[in-house]
Length: 466
Image (cartoon, rainbow, N blue to C red):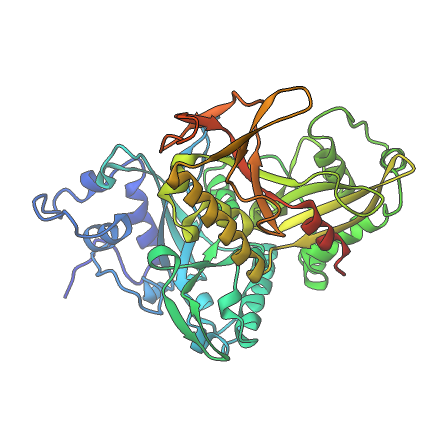
């Protein structure tokens, strides 16, 4: 029988033993337990920690790791920003979702809650150039979900469960929910699993805490919380209305009003020429001070997009996403791609419309991309990757009225897809990044920065949806 260096019946003892890891590495703390010649290919950071420090065999049991005190151990990598604070490198993956069982569960007796009610979190500093045994452990502590967060997490769990009950486990997306996600789990984005209410198999998924929520945990445990403003003021508020309903209700009182009228009603000085004007206007409408971040949006990784509509309801511009690096595009598969990750966020669209040359607030809408549309963007992404891989970016040249030659590319255009296309997103044609394969026509080894865009006609449909 194993003799543990902590009392398995005492949560305080386990946590105190875990905290001896702070500012240490696995190599240092497991020095007497590890066999250096045999450690290769013996597992990842978490598995080695469990086996050689806490002295229990890694497993996938439905119970918490320290079942005697209902404490689940989770490890996660962090990275350092320029301001020296730590942020999460990724979402925090919890237990696998059992599609066949979860539909019969309630939240309180669910496998998720039984396993993750109390978390013992160990965050280590991820450095590519180092062996994981030499990663420095920075934060170790227990995490219990605050009441308001737990209410939102319960709603997220219910949404995921109801989608499974509706036979749509294959359509689950992290954009469906706020703090608790259903991320793909397995090789290249998820092995296929049976679901109880549909014939089609669904990708294996696990419950996960969104990256933004993990950042909040890190800041809380390290006592370095950013200056947040809260939309939800109390547990009673979130029990009676969802976050989405609360946000929409705050904006509704300003529907039909021009920007100038809104500013007069808010009576808050906001620089209209600033790049963040619309972001600040949204904060002010939500009752958030301009120097503060919106706590709930940060935790849920909500992407806010302001859209200006012409009188025919067509957005004045397509919606851009961050530029992609050609080399990274080739190294990724769709399931692990940056673009899919972005599309599986929840968005808040704030729609203004030009009426008699004045911008009028028309509506706000929470939205995440439907499964079938994500599949269509995948087709655009795959075609883009193929163009880069073939070295045939430039198709031909055309001459404009001024006699200037411009390049015509093989990247997917609006004719290729009704949802998304690829085009430049650069200061000018000389704003370039490296190509993994030289362009055959131009012999260029670098090419103008490009990104994926949502077609304005597609965004119009989002606006018109009830």
